[in-house]
Each structure stands twice: as structure tokens, then as C-alpha cells.
Length: 372
Figure 1 (tube, rainbow, N blue to C red):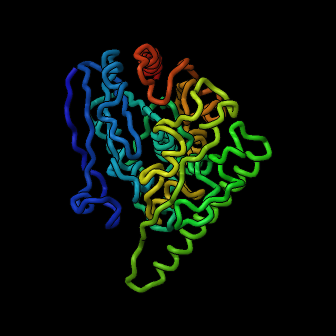
Figure 2 (cartoon, helix red, strand yellow):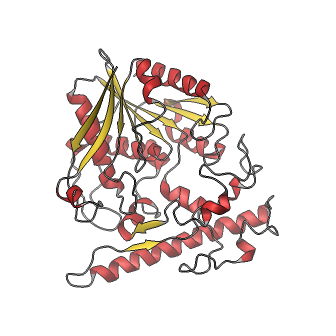
């Protein structure tokens, strides 16, 4: 096995779509290639913003005969201006490069938030429909940018950012400019409400989460219209969304039960993360919000997976504190008979401290890749 750092130039977007001036003029992405001599199948592991250059599957899968390509998007480390419509072009650059190296089969591995990205990519690769971002900006995606892959592996798979935030956002917020202002009757951290949480509380809670997201989305759309009505005015604006990690399932394991520990998230104690200065979706822009978090996002994972035709394998981590049994069922329904499913008993979101489960997953992925 040989390791190489690979630089790929990708298509430029509008100014300020990425953080550095260099990226605006000549954007590029980086990948770490674990090359296996004689391999005919290569796999890309990717996430919209996380750096997967040291992903736990790289060495195990290369040892099982797959060339592995850990690829970053141009938004690595910062999702404030992330556009999924650009991120799929970045993934396409990786698939195109692997095809040019002579690999006959390409497998896309979507881990965590990467699941929605690879599903969107493959759906658009098979039938390109995107012409604009949800903010209304034209996006020049060409079929040549998106060569189709041959299969998809989903590991601890989030359904997509628009679904995540609707289930995680704190509906007790009563002032979007005040991190502390809270409605005690909707506060999941108020002991008077639980845990355990009643069915009536959960019904009110979920409805209020949707209402808050609708309010933020309507504000973002109106602000975009206001800015863009100004001659030579700004096209975008940054803003903060407070308290975005308040899913009662993290406190009450009797809701959608699995093997997870109560009062935990994949990042730490729920209340700490909910109020943290940096958390999921905390800092964003109007265009980034519309593309990622709003109901108008094109990156809903199961919806896109249902539009694909390739084989799919799904790995369910049964002690995951952010992916629940109902999520895995939604993925399974989207793929139907094309999907094979594997349970990783006792595995948390990152399979922490479980080399046996990493080996189990790697064996299954390698076998799946051989059948593509």
C-alpha cells in the first residue's frame, strides 16, 4: 500500500463561497490516497465539512484490497457558506480522477453527514436536475462534473442536515438574539418536563421545532430578498442560530430505543452542546442556511437515495446517540430491495474503542465491493 496526498482543482463558484481568497480564484480540494497495487475497485470516504484524512476505515479497507481515497470538500472545517450544489462537484472531481487512474469500480462511503452528500451526488449523477441553489443563484453543474459511482455504503448515516436540525433545534428559544431566553414549558432541560417525556410533551415539542424552523427560513428568505433588492448590494449575510442540539431522545432512551447511553450526544452532554459557542449549524450565512439546513435543501438523504439505481449497504450502530432505529428504517425504505443491512452491536457513532466492529464493517464493505 502506498499513501499519496492528492490535489484536485475544482470549478470556481461565486466570490465568498469559500473562506480563502485563493479558494475563490482557483479552488482546490485535497485527498489522501491509500493505493493498493492491482486493485480494480476504489472507494471514496467523504463528509461535507469533516476532515476524513485519518478515517478509521482507510487502513482496514486498504488491507482488504480496496484503494481508499479520503477526500475533503472545499468547505472542510467550515460550513458557514457551504453549498451542497458545489460540494457534489468536489466529490465528482474525486470520482473523475479515480476513473482516469483506471479503476473499474468506484464505491462511495457516506459516513455520518457524508451519507446525504453521497446520496445527493449519485442521484444527480444519474439524472442531473440542479440548475440553481435554494437561494436562487444559478449553479453551473454539468453532467461531465458528476460521473456516476457503482455503489454506496452508508455508515452511521444522518438523514440530511434539513432533517437533523428540525429534530435537534431547541423550540424553547423565544428570542433569536438571546441565547438564554427560554419558554419553560417547552424546555427539555426543565426537570418539570422530563425525562421521561410524555407523549403530549413530545407532540408539542416537535410541532414547536417545526414552527421555529419555518420562522427562521421565512426570515432568511425575506432577508435575501431585501439584500438583493439593493443596487450593487450584498448577496449574502452571516447570522447565528442559537441552541441547535436539543433532541429529547438524547436525554430519554425510551424514545426510539437502542443501546445508547442516556444524557449523551456524539459531542458530549446535551445541554452543554446546546448552549455552546460552537455547535451544529451555529454559524451560517443566508445562502449556506438555505442550501444545508432549510426545508428547501436539495440534500435530503433518503429522498435522493430513492432516486438512485446502484446497490447500497447500510451499517447500523446500535449504541449511536444521534442515529436512531427510525432513521435506519427511513434509509431502508428509500433503497428497498437494493439494500443490504448490517448491525454493529454496541457500536457508537464512531465505533469508539471497538476494533472488532471496525473489522466487521470492513469485511462487509470489502465483500460488498467485490459484488459491484
